[in-house]
Image (cartoon, rainbow, N blue to C red; front, side, top):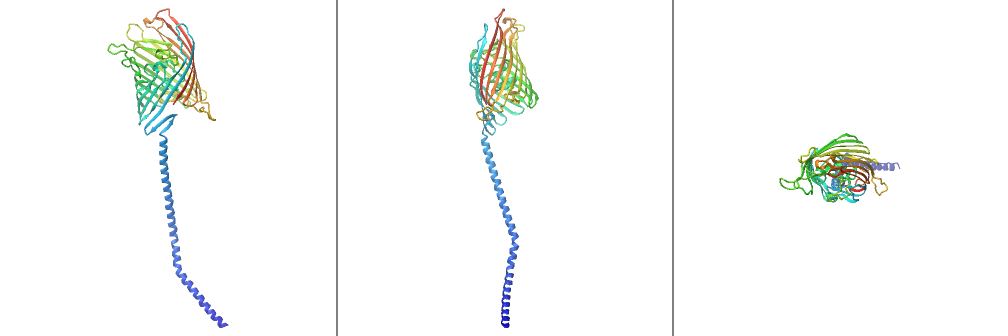
Length: 496
């Protein structure tokens, strides 16, 4: 047993020894591979990290590329969207430095007159008309170049269908602007604001007479203006109105306006200005060296244009200087306005002088004058807006438009009052044979209520109390005409 056990032990030891040798040989053989594998593990990790970084960079580059392409597409889309816009409610086409905006002003008036007419008084015709029906384009023609073309299909009488504005302007030399063509030159504070922003249906008579001498819509002119935030100045050389007939050589005149914004706060503004007109070359009626010069007639309808019983279907004038043969006509005026929150006040004085052609009459050069004062209160809290380029005030901007939706507001409501005087009497204690002119004196009270449902639509209701005193007849005793009229007028307006 012992020998067998010993023999088995030897065999076991031999076997175990062989196994141990094999394991040892295998370990020796494998250990270099394991060592090599352990040695290459950091390199593999580093390689993976590099590959991850490369992938991350590629992802970032792809994102940047996509973002750039998106920005380009968005920019192109935005530019395409900006080609046609609604600029302040006006359809506008823009492409580079070129733009064209559709402009329109339509005013439909209706009025009813009633009065107490003494002998010689004039009956006024109730009715309706399109005071203005304008449509056209304005915009830019490159950097520094502006243009406008507006045609008026409305009006009455001599104000019938015609070109309202057709001009080109260079504005690239700030603060100056140079305008040439047919337009309404700046003549006063009330005139500079534009027809769509007047406080009442019509401007005061003194303002209308001043602008009609050498200004007004469709006047051929060259004008230079300089304007800043606190100042305004303009001068214009003017000729005849577009479509004017009955004269041979055009009238030539100079007119200008200066104004300063003396107080400019967020809720308060005060502006003062002066204006003037000098007609140095009246028009001729006929050709030749001995042509008959055109005469001047100073007159104006009673601050409404619905009546059409005057000359050439124009509104009838209750006061008139009659035809005056003059070699020169001069006008000067002062005006100003103040705005405090929703309150607004404005006034102006105008003086007129005509130099009669030599007739041997002492002190025969007529002098006339007129003035007005007006005020308004925007009941809904909006304010009249100051427009620096024209040194004037515009209609209030509606805060809460009146619409058909559940969130509708009431629009803007404005109450207004005006008193105006125009005196066309000169030396009326004398007969017309020695130079006296009895053109009459016209006093008008006007009450107004304006409703702005939105920034493009307006309804205006005016009540006028008209008082005219004038004398008639060539010699004493004169007939005194005391005419009193009342008028109620409504305007429906669309402007953009």
